[in-house]
Length: 230
Image 1 (cartoon, rainbow, N blue to C red):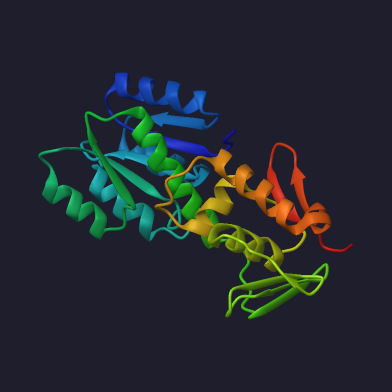
Image 2 (tube, rainbow, N blue to C red):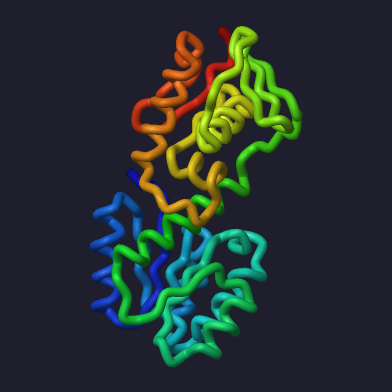
């Protein structure tokens, strides 16, 4: 279940109500406003902004530019809502820092998928990164250069995805990661899978690790972590 706050900016009340309903149903908190001025005041409370380009007062392009220039909002993803005829505005919006766009009329499911993708990217940019070529933990050795995993000295036959998940968790022992974070880091923004697929990969990985699989811990309601010590 999502917990992030989405700022929705549109001067059409029916669109605000539609997006608020669908986003709250997915577990997001929603701040819905009808003007650029109100959005500028509320943006620092949001994790992502859904922004209509055609607004009274401060329009979407100008608001996007302002938010990306502010220190407290520069890293917040912005998804623009635009009519199909506004190609030049889309280009301008992307040039001033918008992260994605969706054309009207739009499917709420498509927009929510775009929101999830942007939030995964945002999360992955804040995760700790280490560069050791060989990782050893719980007598499991992960050679990232040669793409080899050994447990108790015996090589394991892992898929590319299983290897990537194991490497990521082992690089950050003790850290808890959501399924969406794991997808974002392991496969990037264009990996077309559901969060349930991560559970399947973890299950397969645990089986191949045998008794070592217990070190990949499930944190109920959150995700997974690699245990720090035996």
